[in-house]
Amino acid sequence: MSEDLISVVSDKMGTSSSTSIYDVLYPTGFFNVDYLNGYKINGYHKDGTKFSYDAFGIVDGSFNLVVGRTGSGKTTAAIQWGANIIRRFENARMFIASIEGGITINRLEALTGWFGDDLFKRVSIRNSGLNVESIYKEILSIYDAKMANKDEYLYDTGHVDSRGLPIIKMVPTVYVIDSVANMVPERVANRGEMGGQMDATAIAKANTQFIKLTMQLLKTANIIVLAINHINKRVETGFMPTKNDIPYLKQDETLPGGKAINYDANNIFKLDDKKIKEESFGFNGKEIVVQMIKSRTNKANMTTPLLLNFDIGFDPYFSLLLLLKDTGRVKAKGAYMQLDEHADMKFTNKKFTEILFDNKDFQKVFFEAAKEECRKLLTPTKTLTESVDNTLSNDVMALFRAMDQVEE
Image (cartoon, rainbow, N blue to C red; front, side, top):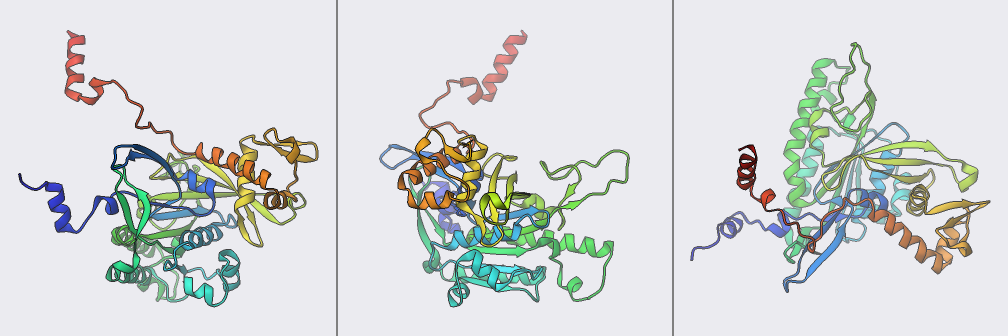
């Protein structure tokens, strides 16, 4: 018998379905955001037994946009998410192209938890000489280095595909671009003067070429791009409002940088902010609503809250507390709050982290409740034990024949 065609081609191309087809998701450390972009995996082990598990986080080798207005925490989110993605891998790194130059080392240390030499072993940051070409060259250099040293970077993810086979990936590399709104080609950046429509067209073309050249590099070498983009306000001059190119953005909201970057992004996270009462929480910050404008792994237009502490960045514990408040699991009981029916575990915002870390019973019920609510963000999928006896839907020709019989 001749060899299987798929196996022959895979061998010649040096590809494997378990590495090139199946995705692995990397948690950002903010589990309600991770589940917002997650999905359920069903499959079979080699012995024929069924399995099911939650995949949550950001997909390997993906291009992600983090968008919002000024002050919504876009850069803070990207840095914290990126640091948490690489944290558990000794040889994983994060690169930051700080085009706007607003990321200080002190802020970087506070957000990542790495200081001095430890920071620079894990993070590379540039804030000068940045343009479309130089950013592409750096991503290409990361790709070349990882491909030339596969043995150093390939690892067993611990996940299996739907056939029960291990999924092998390269350790993740995170690349933060702050921001694509200011990412311009070298000839425009070096001219040092204001441009017009021709420059805008040149920027859009350069960004289109950039995204098309990098997409395959990202997936192959597991480079996760977190690109920050601003939301601009459209000024309508005509009688009829212009239809928005990006679903779930407001009618007057637009994203700069050219259509290709916005269309080809795997995910678009939109951050909206609202103030909180400082005296209620004991620190100055904002509540941020994260909306999935676009997702390749879950349904779009879902939202979840995060809490931004201006001193330390986004707080994962208070963010889960906000989620439980929004879902009705935490309710006000006079001057205190209560989780579900646990009347013996009342607390206030200011005392929340104290009871969470000191009271193991509260910790258990809190995280169990948070996990339950996070899992509700996953798109429902049929399990392998569910079957549908629908012969016609599985045979298009039979369906047409049945329709013909009805007409007769």
